Length: 185
Image 1 (cartoon, one colour):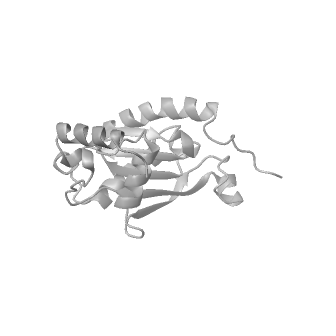
Image 2: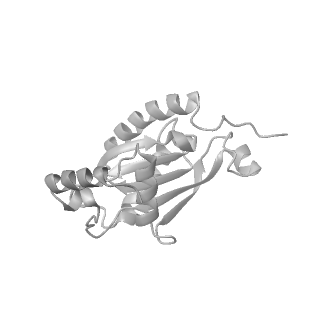
Image 3: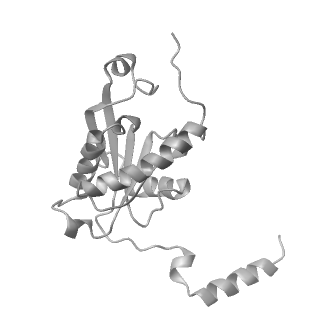
């Protein structure tokens, strides 16, 4: 029997579920004691990926001594979330300089800040939705399967090399004016 899933994103159920649940996630995670700047169920992922950004002072505001502890706490809180954790198959925990609603920003943060092996935390037996086609048939039948948390939180201070972050506004303006007047090669 074929497995049925929602249409390719972004579909109407992705916007409805993603938007309303994102607000709930932000509130719920804050209530759980996690200093969340924002939480966003990414519509382009069929709302299976939750991007969570944390405030820069999360170390001072919590008892977590590492980003690994922080990420595990986020994953466990998501799994415990009533009527919602089962939507999420993957969680990205990112610094608050990343805009979770901007897919380019999230992918950049994921690719540059999550270690390929050390940055992955697997929660093996979480509640899952039986419609999730990424899971095996047995997992869908039992309603339990793994959820992955990606640690994209930097332990060290980051310094951006971006043009906009390193030059005064007047230099940026003049540069763009010069570029706008340049003839193509």
